[in-house]
Length: 429
Image 1: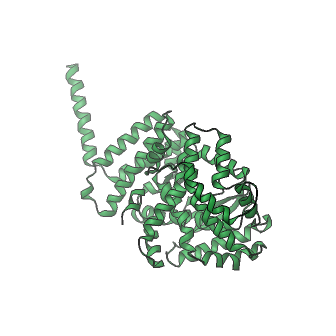
Image 2: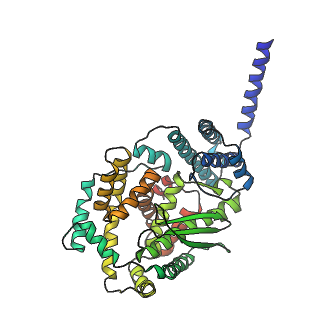
Image 3: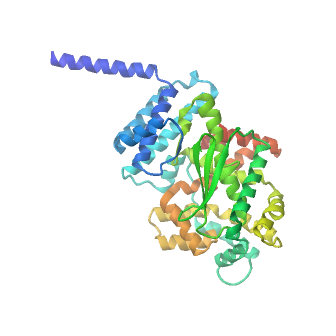
């Protein structure tokens, strides 16, 4: 009789599970996904980059977070539930929502494996977390780029020192940082708003901070509001005003987050967008679109014209060598991939920190202080570094496939930053 009772209980449990699967929905899965993500954030500080959902969900996660092992089992269960939803029964945007959830859950599973001590190669880690496998080039691949830059900054001594010294001439005086950044962000917003309807009431605050491994950061607060922080540990050059204004603001992180909140969280009730796990495919889209947004907002010669007319005077800097400075920065962009190789070699133990700093100086053409900060970032964020250069290249190719017309490119960009976009979507038009 006892055996029969146990068998009956198992049948009842199986029936309950079957009934749950049959009546499951993406909304229910999304709510459980948010709760799981918040609990992972309790196990790894910094995992949750932004959250603006129900406060009681965050309170529950703080009060009783599950173990990392239990959260790993939950991620697998949520993936199974999501896979059980018939994609053919969903309208196209809901199908993309389902695919997005599966990608986010795969990233969560990867991160939880890492939190349990599993060691992954740099490429495997990047693919598991961010949905794309980087191609790592030997550093010698970038030597021709260095040779090309030699011609732009002739002289004696190490190239990195010459490049750094040239760029230091374009440092914004500390007492002029705020007016320069205020003007730059306002212009980035104006250019973005000319093509993308920004939600009424959206806003941000900006502050200058120190003791960080990054140069700028956007903390999205929900309710269409961001906090933008600019790190002043190292002197800030004039080019960073437009760079960070677009990247952290418009059409970068602030624009992306507020559009997702307006169009997906508010209008559609998709609660999964109320939480942003940093180690997920969302980050490749966020960083890639934010970096490409600089060129989209200031195409061709427009950046040089704007900076020399508006920002240089505000900073009190001469404009005589502005064109040469911008040409140097564009050439340095071709060295972006070297950072991935250095990061992989360092994280996988083939080089030590001192060598990583040395190679960063050589192949990123920065001072030792800036190289130290770059390696600090690698230590903290690991394979996250791929999201900048590789993400930018992928977003650029996708957006510019729309053709040369600026309106068409902005329309393509708007879709990228306001819909359930994954790295794989950038490969398809």
